[in-house]
Amino acid sequence: MSTASSPSSKTSVLRLQGVGHRYGAKTIFSGVSWCLEWGSRWSLLGSSGEGKSTLLALMAGAVALQEGRMYFQGAPYAEQHQALLGRHPAIGYLAQQDYLQPVLSVVDNIAQAQRHIPERKAKAYRQEALERLGLAALAGQAVRQLSGGQRQRVALAALLAGNWSLLLLDEPFGELDFPWRMAARRFLADHAGEAAVVLVSHDPAEALPFAGSLAYLDGGRLQIPGTPRRVFHHPPSAKLARITGEVNELDAAWREYFQTEESLVRPSHIRKVEAGGVPVLLKEKAMGVGGEHWWIGQENSPLLLQMAAPPEAVLEKGAPLEVNIKKPPREEEA
Image (cartoon, rainbow, N blue to C red; front, top):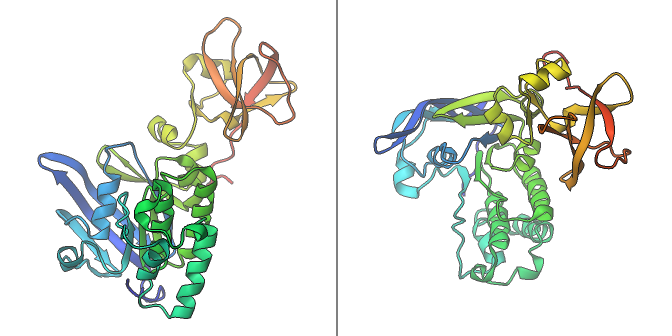
């Protein structure tokens, strides 16, 4: 465990310049430039195989830098940390493999990460972590006896017991069911402190609420498309729109029918109106995350659009309704 430097001393925690990585002859990513500032909260997105885990491991010092430069708190990233420790000593890194001590108990795994913390403070943290992450009844149990989701909660508790300048988390909630995902995300937010945080997740329900900014690996290049709000409501590409949630991709016929230039429309952007909208039929409906969802279409067309059902609306399949498309203004317009 490391003692983090004061945020007031440096604005930038980690800065990447032209970073690239290859496996043999295959380029995973190249030309990656990225600045992580104190207190920033990032979600790193991308399709499977784009190199998200590799980029995270490289920033942690667990993978050797092949191309480009990195600067930690303004100084060149010390490569000796990679050879000696497998990661940078001031960077907290939670890989998909948790690296817990399987023969030690839950509480002892957390305590190991607190070796340089005064016992009174360390004990208070352990009690809070055990209670909030649902581990109190398992405190004395060996980690090897736990389920994958239980181990993941222990790993998060152990990581956040440290005092880090940068936290890198690779799918930290992947094995948790919904209630524990929410509890773990709140615990992370409460204990990340002033560290910069990068979270990799395939689940937009985790990535979007957590982040202040999104980073996106696509075709070997890193893009910074903006805030979660901007990307959700005004995605710059269909590929990024699909990664960040359910989306309707309007073809030319639908755009003409709605008299709109929008081609990427979220279910929540389609609104039921009493008058002045376009006529459609309710063709399918089902419960989903966040409430009931409807699939609407034109009378003689098999093409369907998904929309979020108004909570007060009660309609049967086949019922006519009128809808329009309404998106929030872009951030620069708000």
